[in-house]
Length: 211
Image 1 (cartoon, helix red, strand yellow):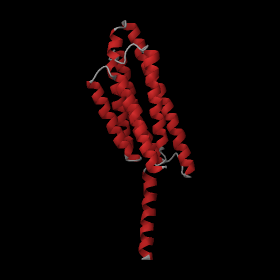
Image 2 (spheres, one colour):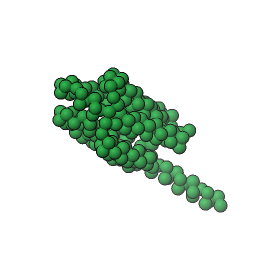
Image 3 (cartoon, one colour):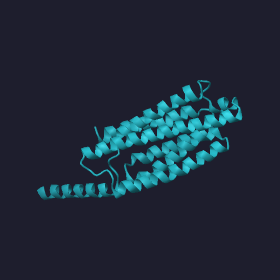
Image 4 (cartoon, helix red, strand yellow):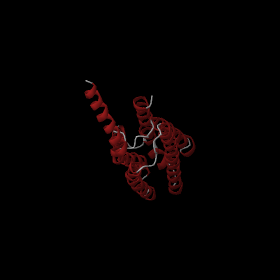
């Protein structure tokens, strides 16, 4: 019996070592929660300061603007989204580094490097694509583009971290595709995709791996 228990313990230890060598496990659930809250705050900034509380429907608002003003408003929305992204990344780094230090693990490893590469390729591609949308005055596709390419980035990076990231990415892609077919509700889809989904994901991750 003792030998069996020792064998089970050895197998679990080997599995844990292999998992750490192939997956980035310092991702914190709290980073998801705060990223979601930051995204919701960004949506509120867009509604109250960029759209001037005129309408939650982007298409209605931009149809009432002269071409030049609509162009500037589009860039303001892009800047708002970029700030949300930067703050979310910084928050994610903070909580992930804190988790790694608490567990006495190295934050930067070959695995975390591969995760970053797989995350950045779809994100940078999406950034270029969304810039093209702005120049072509396709404002209604900005939020769907953000959601879809962000979801693709999560799916791409998920093989190097927790499996829950894959499902979050799939939900982001679905949200983006639905929003593309339901024009005018961009802020609502932004709040749901980048806000509520992140908060729910973060709470699930925190409860499962950190609580």
